[in-house]
Amino acid sequence: MVDVDSFIDEKITEIADAVGDENAVIALSGGVDSSTAAALAYEAIGDQLTPVYVDTGLMRKGETEGIRETFDYMESLRVVDARERFLEQLAGVTDPEAKRHAIGEQFIREFETVARDVGADYLVQGTIYPDRIESEGTIKSHHNVGGLPERIDFEGIVEPMRDLYKDEVREVARELDLEAVISERMPFPGPGLAVRIIGEVTEEKLGVAREANHVVEEELEAYDPWQALAAVIGKATGVKGDNRVHGWVVAVRSVESRDGMTARAQEIDWETLQRIQSRITGENESVARVLYDVTHKPPATIEYE
Ligand code: XMP
Image (cartoon, rainbow, N blue to C red; front, top):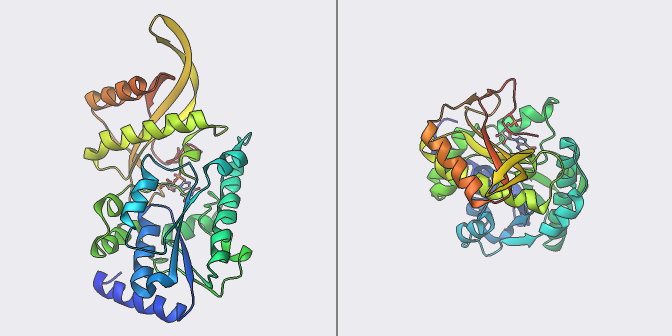
């Protein structure tokens, strides 16, 4: 990207020309990519764009409220409460790719319903360069790439940021005055907390993962990680009060990276790690242990599934 201002002007014209007088939809996830794409497209075509936020129940703490506030100025915003339907689809599913598939499918169903309802002809997507590269390989099936176009008969797909890296997207977001909570936000995977839970996704594990991720994001902000996260990885014995309990094991991970393709585990001071441990075990009775992950990528991936 040469210059942010000219990039923005160019893309606004491109989107307006592509969509013309028709309607478009975009799936908003709350992450920097889709938020930036939505803000660009809204500048270009206003309420001809319907941004759709599907509350999957797999999102970060406070995400839904945050979305409503940030995009309050878009009158066409649709918020779909699909939490129960996602949990139903995930019941009994333990394989990581099967989970991604179940989430992707349900997401498409939810999104299709709105797209049909508003008679959308165009699909705007916040796809960025690394998404395309990883999806071409066999690394993981990123559910935000592919899928939709085959299911809904759109006249066209608009991907204004398909050639950008994450740090360039942030520059665009800042220039568009997207709030710092969005422009500076860590990347969050499409399947959300489901890839931070090993095995079946249940309401209980989701509650543990949501709170623990919130603690980690808060406590590690000062380290400016590419991503900091917590994952519910199993159960182990612990002692709470006078009793031995079989409680959840939460793994904490914080990495530096440029594009997520490789990553280095961050060195975190003991005091901070202990504070994280005591907040996570203190705020949640059912957590018995907190571990810190020192593995780089490779050999580990950033997410747990
Ligand atoms: P991994 O775990 O493969 O993650 O090292 C690399 C980057 O991709 C994100 N990620 C995903 N994003 N759908 C997404 O949209 C997915 O299924 C998915 N899996 C991983 C991860 O958060 C990291 O930024």
